[in-house]
Image 1: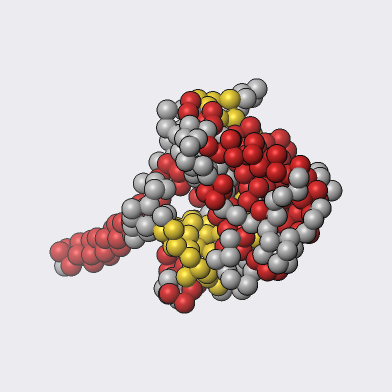
Image 2: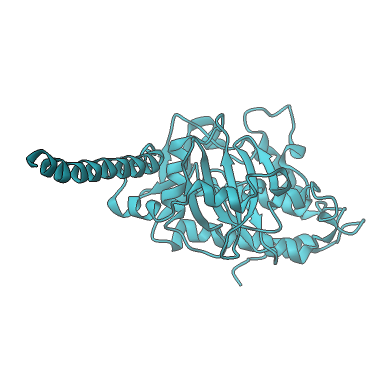
Length: 322
């Protein structure tokens, strides 16, 4: 009788204990991938902002039809990008970082913490992140016209023909406003450090959106310049003082912006301007040559209408504040 009573009490207690342990283990495993992301050095506010962006892998598999080839928008050194559709009807772009991606956890953390704090119409919006099942997934708003390089350099064959000078001017203005926000108007002072055509996304109305903040650096207080031993970025867009001495500042982004303007006006990749005789400072030499050509209005994208438009460069040389 006594043994029966003990068993009657003990069995439910043991069962409840086992169930609690199982639940705790499941929760722990579910959260474990995110804990691996190194957030040491971040404030509680930063950690909270990142945690609010967490999405689970099943949601993204469903949204992208299990990362199907039909949904793939493109692929680069970092991995592939897929179009997705959430159950609430929102279109998304999912950046799936490959195991060999050059964007590691440090860059991933950097992008999450920074972009979560930034809100501007000329910056791409980060909607979420997923770090489950060995996956590193970043979820952004879907931008239908993809990146500037696909349109500007004819990767999408018919697109360049429709990129008249008014549209190019609009694109340049959007990039300028996005940079001004990063440098002066947000609560932070952010140096992008990797401004290039493939990192400028275009929405349905050709509004520019700056993306990819993995290499961005935050400046504090009255800081105006920083020096690093690890020069990262894209050659051809990096300022000479950064390439040669590791010095970067707001001026570094402005230099990259200038290269972008040349590409947008001329419809040519920066590599097309290169001159093998000038190794140390090739790009700035070519910018000087190009500036001279501007005075004679020799630069234009002749694909725009077959002949180019005399005087159209003057449009792009005006301010874009309005």
